[in-house]
Image 1 (cartoon, one colour):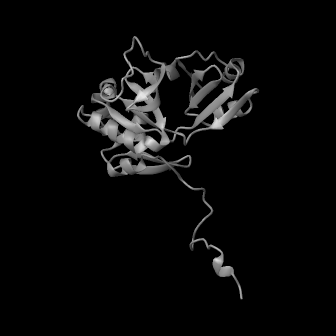
Image 2 (cartoon, one colour):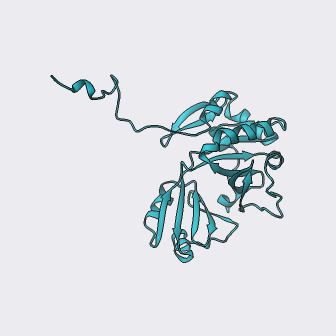
Image 3 (tube, one colour):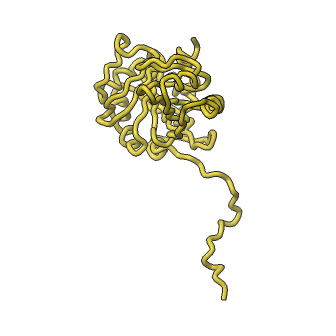
Length: 236
């Protein structure tokens, strides 16, 4: 008698491809009409049927929000000197520094968050002395809110003061976002990236959709977001 029947079998034609990572807001994006494309192992919403040009135009006229959860995120832990040595730059509190492909955010004396970490940043941090690097990409979901009405959309669910005098371009603000702990990065005058707990993804999407739709905002895909201007700090 054999016990081979207890051994799970791969489906016919299955390949040893790595699993595809998915945003906690994928279901919401799909319900809104999103189409997807696998990018760097992530199922990314690239458009919503209208075409990238129309989506970017709509965001430029009012506002748009895009799921940015696929951005790589690293938490760095070490002394202040070690963190700045790893960055090769000063990391002032309350500001973000654009280095290579990522935003570097100093959160505490001994802790920094790197958002948008790609190959060059991962190599830089892996070779740095005196810091611990923790992968937190799937700890934080993220949305990018862009357009002239973006700050007004935020004001409907977030008490953080995002006026330029208080939160200039290049600033980072931790605080309550829709009654959930989060972090806002102001990438440029009309563009914000905000991070929040992975488990609250669908809730946060619904909050932004409810606030934004009344102001003419709509979801946009990665293609449209790419057509909009690059962060000012990245161009400096």
